[in-house]
Amino acid sequence: MQAIRVHEFGPPEVLRLEEMPDPQPGPGQVLVRVHAAGVNPVETYIRSGGYARRPQLPYTPGADAGGIVEAVGEGVTRVAVGDRVYTSGSLTGTYAQLALCDQSQVHPLPERASFAQGAAIGIPYGTAYRALFQRGQALPGEVVLVHGASGGVGVAAVQLARAAGMRVFGTAGSERGRQLVVEQGAHAAFPHNVTDDPQELKDLTDGHGVDLILEMLANVNLAKDLGALARNGRVAVIGSRGTIEIDPRMTMAEERSILGVMLGNATSEEFRHMHAALVAGLENGTLRPIIDKEIPLAEAARAHHEIMEGEHYGKIVLIPPQS
Image (cartoon, rainbow, N blue to C red; front, side):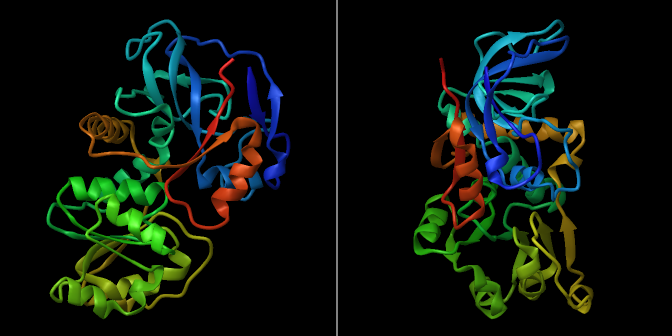
C-alpha cells in the first residue's frame, strides 16, 4: 500500500509518500480501506515536533478516515467486511490506503454521509461534542458562542449546539465564513473580535450574556471572553498558540469558569456516548460535515501548509489512490 511516512520532525515537507506492506488485522482489530483521511491541526503540531506527545519515528500520521472494512481479526463483532465506516483513531495512521484500527475506533458511516464527510467526524465532531456537553455541560436554551465557527471543529459545534436547542452565535474572519456559519445553523455570525466589546453580545441576549464560549485561540481571546460571559458562564478552551494574562477577578463575582478540553482525555464510556450521538446525527441529517478541499494523498505537505495558513470553510481531507 501507499502511505505517508514521517522519518524526522520538521516542516510539512517531511511528509513523504512511500510504499509499505499491507497491515494485517490481529484479534479485535479492523483493517479499513481508506477513501478519505481527515487532516487536523494537531497532526501539524505532532509532525513539527512541538507537541507534548511524540510518536516513535518513523510513523504515519492521521486518526480520522472514511472508508470500507477490508478485513477483520478474530473476535471482531462491531463491524463486518464491506461495511461503510469512519474511524476515530488508528493503530497505524490514516494517511494511507489502508489503516489498521482497534474495533473500538471504528463506527458505522450512514449511507447519507460521503467518505469525505466520514473523515471529518472523529477529531472535529468529537472535540466539539466533548467541549459542549462533556466539559461545558451545555443545556437547551443556553446561549453559546463558537469562536472560529467556519472551521472543522467550529462547524461541528454550531450544528451540535443548534440541534440541541441552544441559541448559537459564531465568529469567522471573512464575510464568506460568516455566511457559512449562519448556513450551518447559527442565529448570528460576527468577526473574531466580537468579544472586544461585550456589550454587543449582552444587548443581543437582553443583558444576560453568553453561557458558554468555545475558544479556539485562547491566547488572543480568553481575557475578553470572560467579560462576555453570563453569571456561571464557562469558557471551554479547545485551542491556544501561546500565553495570555488574565484578571482572575473576572471569574470571581459572577462565578465564571475556564475549562480545558482535550479529546484524548475522554474515557471509554464517554467515547461510547459521544459516537452514539454522532452516528445518530449523521443518520438523521442534523450533522452535515462541510468539506472545503479534497487533496491527493501524495500532496499531504500542501494540506498541512493550507490547514495552518488562512481561514478554512469546513474540512480538508486527503484522498488516497483507490487502485
